[in-house]
View 1 (cartoon, rainbow, N blue to C red):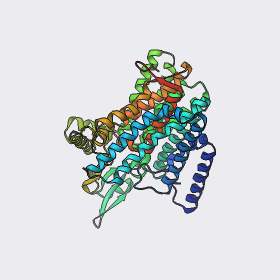
View 2 (view 1 turned 60 degrees about the vertical axis):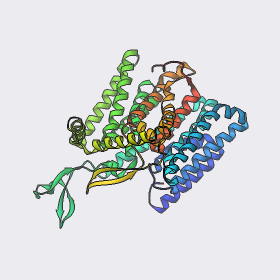
View 3 (view 1 turned 180 degrees about the vertical axis):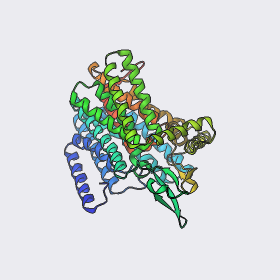
View 4 (view 1 turned 120 degrees about the vertical axis):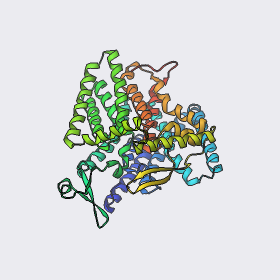
Length: 460
């Protein structure tokens, strides 16, 4: 559905409508289709196009059909007893935030644009209801999410290689118009500026998706803990593909979040001694594949430059424009939170930020902050921040009803949550639909097979 050819777009529309019909007949089939289809929508669309409308239709059918089936089976009272308080509190916070946003001269369109991605967290209800009745379907949900990760990572890898983004270029001025030239011609122009590399994140919006570092971590954990060899092999393949995509983006925070969580997992493996050797071998293999890929693509200079930028920013004030821009964002968010600490400024509240672009200093008015705690403090105040923190982190403090499910399912859930939380400290991925779909899936599984821990979470 992302392809521009009319025939392909028509075919994609037909498939989406067919899936909507199937979702009405079988909520479970529609639910499994939701995650892979999420790769076809734009991460941050400026408006609602055909792709977004069809995807929203499918999600709406899945949610409403699952609720209707549950009402027929158990009645309204049982459903409201389980979800009523949480949905009522969430609805109250949304209404308060709307009033706050409008009272601060925010536009309804901007507020809706800020709210819509978080509505997809409500998808947790259908799967929780389904998996409770059919726990054997849990692995199919994992396969559906794995397919989404593979599609996102594969798109990045294919685009990067097909367009030769690993090849450096130089820039010369021809009649005062910048022109790109390859390395072979650069030696003929003493005034050529370079080398430079294009970033795939400029062309593929989903290249910064949180599911990529989650894919590295979750795929490796599945490879280590899964008893089925085929499942373990598929998990490792997803991990390798996700790592390749992350390395091609040159995004430090994505790689860092995956490394931190894998280090924690390895520490737990060393303490348990049950699967340490297997985990160490697979991590070593992942490291060799990553290092070999960097060497083969000859992008070690770019990664060295990106890491060097970060080191310079720490030691020299203003050395890295990207880092200093983020720090300026954080300062703005904190100041706006101080102005309205209880309920914030409202979702969609915009602020001016300056950054260095190709044509010099650029100023834009944006409605995001590259840090989830500061974003929610600014947009929703203490009330919204506490609510979202509870939503994001609570599944990590749940444990399974059956001890046999602990090793794999909840280890993957906790690792995914931790990866998302760390990566969200540096990137505004928490405002993307895929991020909230994954968070919904985590809640679905946690509610279906787990219960709140009375004390600390059980170690993996």
